[in-house]
Every structure is written in C-alpha cells, then in structure tokens.
Image (cartoon, rainbow, N blue to C red; front, side, top):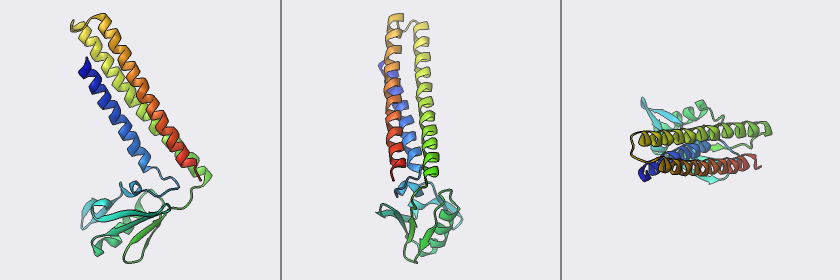
Length: 184
C-alpha cells in the first residue's frame, strides 16, 4: 500500500514538473534562458539545441544574449531564432547575438493566460489519471484478497488527499504564472 502511494507521489510530481516546463516556454514580459531551450539549430547538418553550441545568458530583464562558441554557427543560430514561434528578432553584432524582449500587448497577455490555464488543466488531468490508476490498483488488491475492504477505503482516502494536494499545488503554480504574465 505504501509503495503504491509512493509511486503515485512520484507520478504526480512528474505532472507538476511537466507543468513547470510548459510554463517556462511561455514568453512573459521578462527574459529567461528557457525561452531558447526548445530552439534547435541546424549545425552542420545536425539538429542541435542552442544550449549545446552557445552560452545563453540574461544581461538584463529585457535581453537574452547568446554567444556561440563557433563563429560559423552565428548565422545558423540567428536563422533558427527567426524561424521559431517566439516572434522575436535577434540582433547579431559578430560577437554576440542579442534578443530584445518587447513588452507584451494586453491581448497577448490574455492569450498567454489562456494557454497557461490550458497547461494547468492538462496537469490536473494527468494527476487525476494517476488517482484513477491507484484506485484501480487498490480495487484489484482487494479483489485478490491482498487487502481488506477497510484498508481499501483508507487507501482511497489517502489517494484522494494526495490528489487534492497536487491539484492545489498546480493551481498555485497557475496563479503565480498568471501574476507574472499580467505584470507590466
């Protein structure tokens, strides 16, 4: 029973980790290195993430700077950023590539909040799916006479409490992300 709950905790934590990753992809009015994490550069015919061929830093809250280690990669990195869905324009001065993060429009902020809400709902669905799997396992254990009906009921109560805790955590993450997005 305890190992079942531990497995559930691990899987629900995984859902929250995925939510954090999804939130990292959302462009707020602030610069973060996670903005370019998913951009893949065609580096001499090999698809390579930017972080593997350049140092990415945040000199200030409105700028991402990318410094490729290979001078020949500048054009490819610049092209990959232009082709990404971020809608950002890189500035290449030959030594470093800078991406200025423009302030978000009110309409774009509302769209981003909707996307964040969708990510949160997907996380909650994943958490509830884990709850369903755990409850199914408890029913199977009762059917196999591994646990009594009382133990099953206590297990289901524990699983529900675990689920409630993780759903609450995902809601708190959404509220924090919403505040960050709407912050001007």
